Length: 128
Image (cartoon, rainbow, N blue to C red; front, side, top):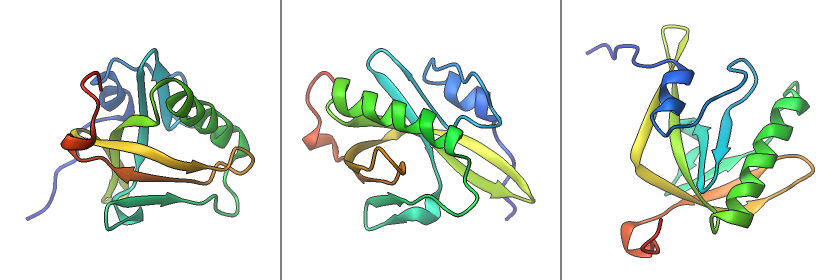
């Protein structure tokens, strides 16, 4: 069965009440205690997400993500929400994943490389 295109990036981030200022280059956002990062399913392995910069990545785009991941680390105990990005027929579909919460494990503030793990509900503090 063919999967249908679902949401734009703006719509998916709006689900979490995050306004993306530049859809072409920003793939994360933060507002108060909410941080949202777009992730690609193929970068998950056994509940761990690894993101490494690739040759040709825009460093300005990475700078915004680094800022938002630092915000998660410093203000949200490392927790962040997810918008899942999937490619369908050459277009990217953006889907909020309200049941998926991640916690930042490590962040290279120079390159933007990061590792995060899926958080199970019993690991969450009451306020998360």
